[in-house]
Image 1 (cartoon, rainbow, N blue to C red):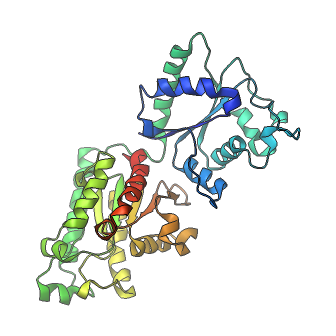
Image 2: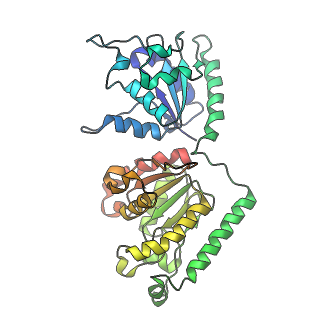
Image 3: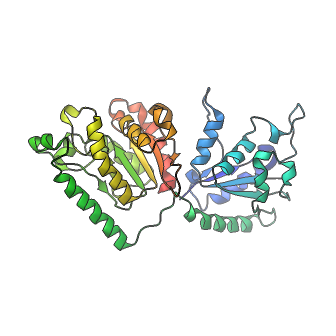
Length: 364
């Protein structure tokens, strides 16, 4: 289920928003509804925080009450014109990001005339509005819920389950790719693999997954079994998937390196170039809506692969942030996360990973 962002001004529509939220909870999970940007850290760019929050949502509800455009600050400046007005900034961002923006009229309000709006949100007046009346509130919300449910499946985060024959073709393509890797004598790690009697670790999971998780390289246990993410780190990952009510059978698990490297060292350029071809084919076959990168090597590789502006940033800045691929007809997002192994030597990071994982609920 995708998420709904509710934009409102407390002095105008807070009572209506509370009632609407209570009704929406009968149909949607609390994590599907985003109402407030809370706990913005000191020093954080609040505009960036708002942009990230809206980017993670699918449908934007702009609550408009009778005083929406008529409130002023002590200096006599209209609130809607203030440089730091959250309501205007959120609407600007939603319009700029191409979100589904639905004005919700309450308290007998009317759609504002475009001439009364700041230029950056003037196009809001052209959006078809939905009215919630006081005396038919429950019935109106029921109609709104039906309207929202009709919109959600068309959003890029939504991926309809493929037909059985399509899934069968994908499974065969992944099986063929695994056999190709098994016999790839030109692989830079083939000799080491055969010496150690290891297996290559292509990947595992659902061939038509909405979520693809990309780690760094197989560990010893993984190379001995040919299965990704087993052992202590795998147990941590399983617990994180459980947060969003998924299992490893619901996602596609793989790495940027598909063979174990000697002494568990970092991947080198030759290896990344070679195995990157296989990763590209997996992305093409599975066609996920989001690639979750685990650890800085995986993150850096994927961000560079898609030549994203964030490719020079650190994982401490990007973890938990959804980054959409800006390409024609692209429905793909990237979300960096810390590697689950971090929890094994820094248990305090478990909550950080859990919070980041919750951002993926819109893809479930």
